[in-house]
Length: 428
Ligand SMILES: CC(=O)N[C@H]1[C@@H](OP(=O)(O)OP(=O)(O)OC[C@H]2O[C@@H](n3ccc(=O)[nH]c3=O)[C@H](O)[C@@H]2O)O[C@H](CO)[C@@H](O)[C@@H]1O
Ligand SMILES: C=C(OP(=O)(O)O)C(=O)O
Image (cartoon, rainbow, N blue to C red):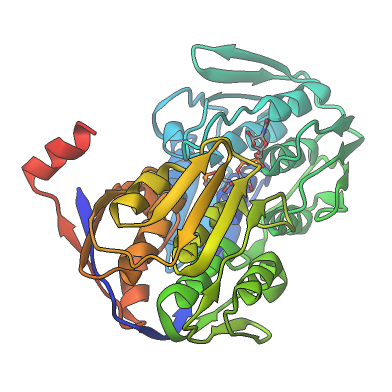
């Protein structure tokens, strides 16, 4: 196991390139199950979630080649192999195997997913959707068993706006008989990306990106070629980093439309930003103003950027209130930021950040993916050396992190953990 060491205080300058979107990748890869011939996906990030999904597709008999960001999946040898445990627990998005396998095989057995611990993350809306399509769903010893004689299109109203449920129902419904209508659907860009791939495979989906999605089921789907969208959360992380510790940073391979809520908030703080067609430039900002943020479903402020943004707020003058309306317990990074001298109080679903504080290097632990991102930003802002453990979380979502940061002039490196450190981490 490794830790990340960061020597803070070096002003970051230059260009950083964003990779393909994790939250698209993890749905596009399972979607390849639905075709009867190979699909090629280009621009995938080299992150552990993608590698784990590759292994899961191989486990069910798929033939997968992943090289230089391009994945070719041949689904012809796949079978409805149960996956009740093991790798499925390493990531959240293994739940997409339920929708895709149900769509193709009319049956699936998939263990309950893992992913970041952010408070309860039920999948009742996914199950409600599968049942509406005619599947019998049971939960046996921590795995979900799904079986249908046939899938029949239905009208499904989501009680909660859910990215995962919207995509999962789409995956199952594309090969159902007749029309499915998903009402109160989530509108995230990743949903449009997945619908684009599915439509190019022969599906008939209309309305992805709005809150009503109509799907006319088809009998057959075939392989295609698809280029993934850029990762708006990775982009947001580097934009926040540019505002926190930059001296002129350009973030490349961005769809600026996806970044509007973040850009507005940064401008409100006084961060100089120039938006180009496919890149965003963040100028050096000496003084920042405190702002309040509330996470919401897209196009609101993304919960996945709440933790990195909280770190930035330690540099702003005054008190800022950060409220997470999506998850009840997405504040595990706060204790770690406090170790680094941040002055932050939590109250229920809100954190109050009092600035300005100068962060100090410390030994900290990433409890989840974006907690990790927030601590890396903190380390780059801080005086002295910061050591971040829990890199397995960060590796789920950030490809080539050390190389990308080094390219901006950051002094950051990975180091093997000693036996003593491993014991300490195990006991905390
Ligand atoms: C792999 C992936 O794409 N992960 C993203 C996805 O997670 P995920 O798809 O798991 O998140 P959802 O959009 O489903 O969750 C949103 C909210 O709805 C609740 N809910 C969800 C489903 C359900 O059946 N019942 C229910 O109550 C959740 O507990 C949460 O409070 O969207 C989240 C919200 O933008 C992001 O933080 C994650 O990065
Ligand atoms: C919460 C996240 O991921 P996941 O849903 O995969 O756990 C995230 O990407 O911030």
